[in-house]
Image 1: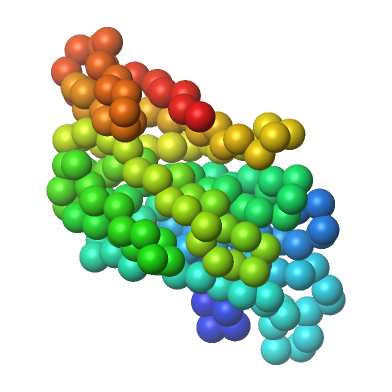
Image 2: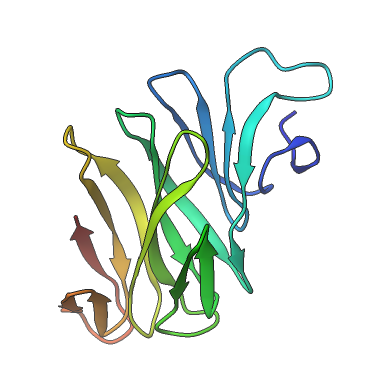
Length: 171
C-alpha cells in the first residue's frame, strides 16, 4: 500500500515512529526518511508530507528513529559509502566502501536536516537505537567492531578479540 511509487523513500523499512502530533515517520534502508501525516490515504496512496533521501554511493541503513517532544526526528544507523550527505552535511567513512560507520541525524518537522554526526573506525560500526531526553539531548547506542572507534573528541577501544563487537552509548 505504501510504496516507493507513491512517495516512500525506499522499499526497505527499518523503523516506524509516531510523533506527538500524530505524524508517521518511516526510516528506510538506503533511501532516507519519509513523513506521513496520518490522514486517511486517497485511493492512489498516502498523502506524504515529505520524503528525504540521502546521497551516498553505497549502502545507507536507517536502523532507528525517535520523535523528539518538539516534533523533530532523530535517526541513527550506518553507512557503507565512502561518504554520505544529509542535507548540506557530508560525513566521511573511516573504513571506506562496504565497512560501515555510524550516523546520527536530527531533522525538523518540515524535513530539513538540522545536523548530522558520524563516528566509527576501520571495521563495521552501526547505531541501532536513538532517543532524546526532555531537554532535547540525543542519545544513541549500537556496536563497533573496529579496534578503535572515533567519536570526536573521544576514542573507544574495542575490549574484545579482533573481529568481535563491542557496544557504545553516546550523547
